[in-house]
Structure formats: C-alpha cells, structure tokens
Amino acid sequence: RAAEAHVPLRRACELEPEAAENWIYLARAEWKRGRPEDGIAHLRRAQAKGPDTLALLIHFAHLLRETDRDEEAAALCAEILARDPRQMLWRTMGGLALCELG
Image (cartoon, rainbow, N blue to C red):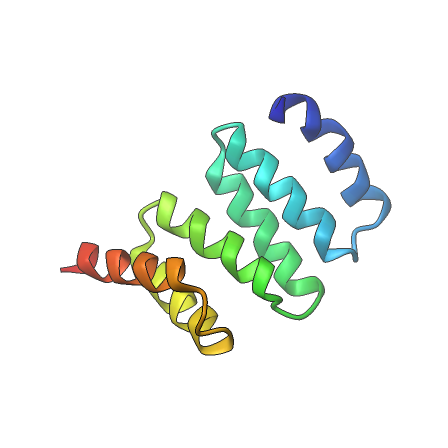
C-alpha cells in the first residue's frame, strides 16, 4: 500500500511544502517502497522546514541505520537519548550502530 500512499503524500508535500510532517510521512512511504535513499532526502527536507522533533530524529535514525550509515545513526541515537532517556530502543540501536563501526 505504500506505493498507493506515495501519490497523495507527494501531493501534500507539493501543496504544503513548509509542513515538515508531510515530508516525514512521504519519507516513511518511500522506505516502505524500498527506496530508503529517497526517504532520507525527504527527511532532510523535513529537517530544513522546522525543528528537529523527536519523531523526526527517530525516523531519521532508523533510515540511516537501514542504509548502513552507522556513524550518523549512532549520533542521532545519542541525541534522541539526550532528549528522552526513556527511549531504550534507541540506546540499543545506537549501540548496534557503534558496533558496526568497529
């Protein structure tokens, strides 16, 4: 269904390009479609549109980890934990990313 969702989500980004949430949703759809690089590009657009919300950072860290960008993922996981230490999953994700770096 991500392929179907892509069209209206892309249109939402065209209609409201300043709404960071639209870019986050489109990024998620791209990831589900097997296009994580496009998802990362959309998350970068979302980042440029507004503050780095915890939700944005979580999506970003996940996609970075999925695309083997472990150094960037580990840094974002550390930032997520600095903002909310209760995010235990991201402590694990950050540790995994660091292990991949050697």
